Length: 479
Image 1: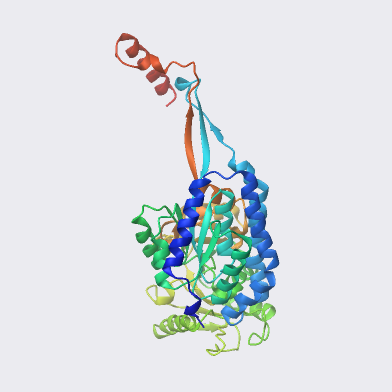
Image 2: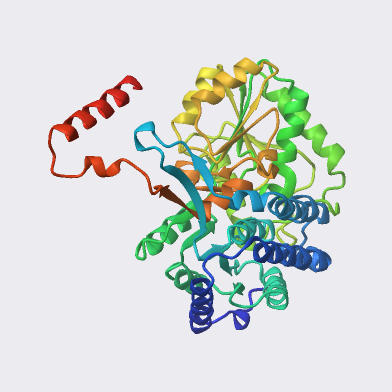
């Protein structure tokens, strides 16, 4: 139940933003000790609140498997913080870059500077990790932050708002709670950078509002991430990894495999393997504590709608358990769908649940053709024992991220940038990529006292022409 009485007012939002902005202008370049302290306090906040986080998120979902929260939220949050603490001081250092010979003895540097105040709009599906990840990037880059949490996770929002207030000054980190009205007011503030994670339609609105202030944005969206299983794949392994990526958080994951392409005639093997896998890993699914529920009735009804639309248009359902869905508890057991038309809802909307279309095709060329005809996905998952085949496929498909013979694990790699492309988002973060995204990388040219630049000043005469011609010859010789 959403308690609007707990929502913050627009006046509170503006006051907290004003305080953070004033503080960031007064301290525009925090040293490493300050940044490290903020990261360590964030780590302490999370360590002290782990049990509360697990209970709060489970309450918001109606039941969230504790293992899902520990594995996909708490653990990667700690990893992200630890990675920033280990490498952040090095990321801060000016980066010397080459200076063309005709400008020497001058030097060129890239100097990272904090942007100032970062706004973070976090989603409901992974409310902890998708708040902590951007926060880590903001803090290690020397920024202050305001967070707007999702109204669909009120228990989690209450925890993080209280925990942030206990561990941080309000001008360092402030958490705001509210519905669409607060969200729009939040996005309309003149942040130095705005970070949004959510669906594409809301992302368009966030970007349009931010554009009024020319606020730079990072949009982490979603889309329909395909899995490609070729003739050269190990089918058992492909089934296991695809179902693992699909079933964590009951498919309510932006990088979950959305649908599967495989060679025509191998659908039965995939379906049988998936049914056996679910039976081993989720026995007694109706009472199994490892099965996460669908977040709310709105999302449950949406899944029923797109499933029923597919059936009405000729698709066939292949339940992977004998347990039907339960609207009262929002249990939605996994179902494979075959024969769904390309223009059906299940094939055009991001599924975000345990429905898995399986699409038989004539070969890899058809897989590629189908994928590139659609908006660019957030992730693509390739399954083949032929590494050359995977490389060839991945070169033909543009996606935000990718895994070879795996799903979703690229998100947990601190040295890899994470983000979308085209309709699945813009910008990236995690590790050094997050530091760079939330820093201004200022180009700096350092001219020594003794230099020859004055020789190129007016009046332009014979000497100027000779020197410019010599420099031009040097440039052309290097092209």
